[in-house]
Image (cartoon, rainbow, N blue to C red; front, side, top):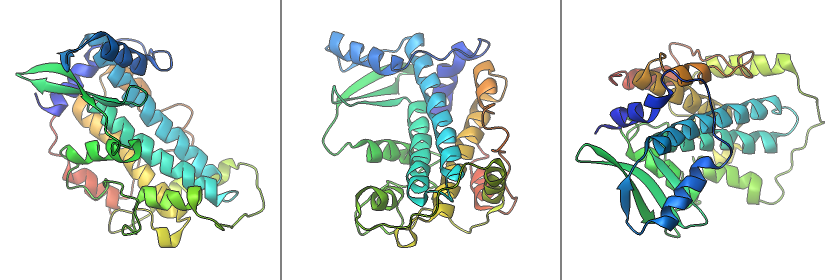
Amino acid sequence: MAIEAQIKTMFKSLARGAKVVPPPGTLAKELNRLVQSNTSAQMPVTTRLLTCFATAAIEMWERSVHSLLISTSISGSSPIWASVSGYYSSHYAVRAFAHLFGYFQLHKAKKIAQIISQNNQLLLDISKKHGSEREHKAYWRIVKNYAPFQNSPMFTLNEDDDAHVESDSGHRNIANYLDHVDGFPAFRVLDDVFLKDRFRRLSDFEVQSAPIPRKDHYPDLDYVQLIAFHRIALFRYYLDSVLGISNSFWKKCRNPTWSSNYLVFQTSPSSFLSTVLQSIQSIQP
């Protein structure tokens, strides 16, 4: 079963229903229960579990949107936290894609749960989580392994060693772990006008290649926020391509009411994002 068909199956029960988001931790608790009560490495997937993966993906995407709002709003007040929250906006967008593809890490159980297709049947595959399967690499690698993102410069393996100058995680590590980062401007309260102007600038910002944050340009807020915006928009475009906007749940989620005054999903026709979107227009709903 192709990944797009799998996604359609995940969202099938949400096609005409009201927007109902499960309580916090629903998916993780259900997966942990299945891990503890089954000795088999593979088991059939219930409709409820598929739906939880779908709603988890959307909630994670909304978390990405919200984090970008926070990042942009404090750009002038705290470059450090604008950079960190901008990174997490990107990370949440990547996790949203990973959940959409049926992948979830169980930290305490040290297991990895993944929906796989076998003989045209969807199964839940449980495997052991190794020490190298850190969240900020594992989720990114999963997304990078799926077409049409394998060759997309929008997604990387998120390596954070010194050899990788352009790396989201490596750039984030400066704020988290480096000493003497400095740069503390006078605090300014949040400004609606500033936020709208900032998002307008991100929408019109033109680059010739993927704006992966550069460690030698820290805090590099333009690139941190721009790549997060691109990934958010790409998730929205991709799910539109797979589901269309007739799916009731996705239709209600794709334009969050709490961000619509600021975040408009329009880009310059000559922007890098537009080029990326054109490269995946072969996706068939």
